[in-house]
Image (cartoon, rainbow, N blue to C red; front, side, top):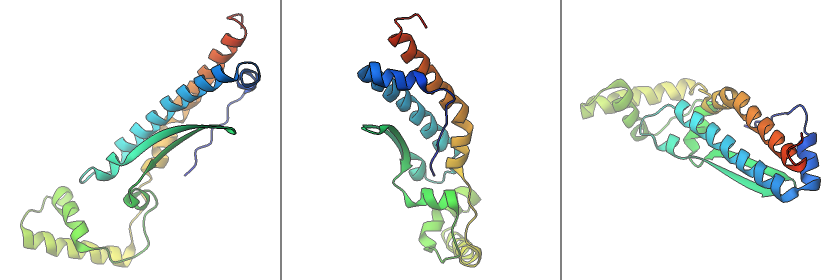
Length: 166
């Protein structure tokens, strides 16, 4: 999922990139770092947990390229994609469902865990899984804060290039 945010007036950033490119890039990188950490935390909080492996796999990074500053929030776990978008009907490994049966349904007896995991797997084989959209919810929930961060960065850049006279 891509989150594109449009700021109203980018003239201060454009001017900063022309007049003080090093300072402007530094401010943009710092702002992007804050923004990606915010989205990362929100996504981790929205992620349903059984073992917490998928939530812990969510990371963020910032890269400065000739085209601009890029912020990335992602997960190395395929399960993050399955949770976000749901799945088509398929027969999952029963062993993979057993921790969910224990954590979510509270079943502890080993034979019962296997039996219920098999029934859940059969349901997934018939219906697939529904999308839960934790990343989308994180992006929407933090959108206003991210915009405010970059508006603040634009003001900081303008203040710097005008010598505090803006």
